[in-house]
Image (cartoon, rainbow, N blue to C red; front, side):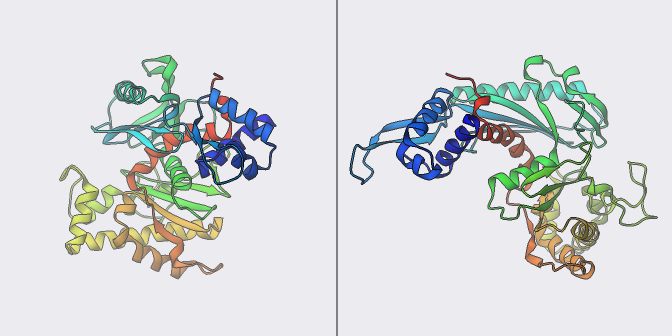
Length: 385
């Protein structure tokens, strides 16, 4: 019960600060004495601060303003992409305080080398956070691959990196700072739900970098599947006898709506620009016919796959994240046309499909926010002062 009440009080302070102790008691429905004890514990654990007394306009002694501590517990998020690594530190308010991204080619490199470089970036980000008065309480790593529910710490496969059965603890330089891996699409969806004006509680979040990932949030909770493999939308066949895929199947969505496929159809190569997605957006905005045609065909393939997801899951919304968010102006018309033509069993509103506000920042932000959300749910995870 105390664990739940600590979360209740911390949530009230986070959502409505500055508040006095009396204000919190009024909001959460607990006695002032109970709230005072809970606030003292949250202060001791470093989650809440209490400022000098301020007048509230009410009769009686002025209250002391409570706020979530912006110089205390924090979450460290890490990301390994095919062409970059990143690190982010988020405070308990959900504000990014450290943000680092380093462009480098990771595909085909030994997992130990990639993880060692990521660990070095994590060390630098944590040192920068500590200089700001932040204390990292957890580490989560976003990876472009399958992370099973069991065993913990395993990346089952990350085909675009060339990884198979990589256990992080076997390669991470410091055994005390090994991060928890999670699929990047899952983290992008959670970041969307936690940090934007996301009103849908049941939605599909589909994103693209080198590959295509999707995540299902059902009634506000991430659905990982029986073994953690849910969301492999990129390997749903949209052309059963189509192009062979690296996964061993044929006609997978990635072969028609993935980054490499769109670049190829647009007459470009992956190494033609430092940022291929930005190049596609620039060419589309300039009216480049081949690029517009490539994006139209990718949108139709994506719409075909999403129509199946809509019929199966009955979501409130569909969110285009990652690179798709930056190309949404040219993808949305064909995706919506495909959905309109194929979703017939249930009503479907075109505005239920929208681009993510986070774009390619989602997975890294979601990785950092995972620790923050756990603390907000259970403040007793923090060491007592």
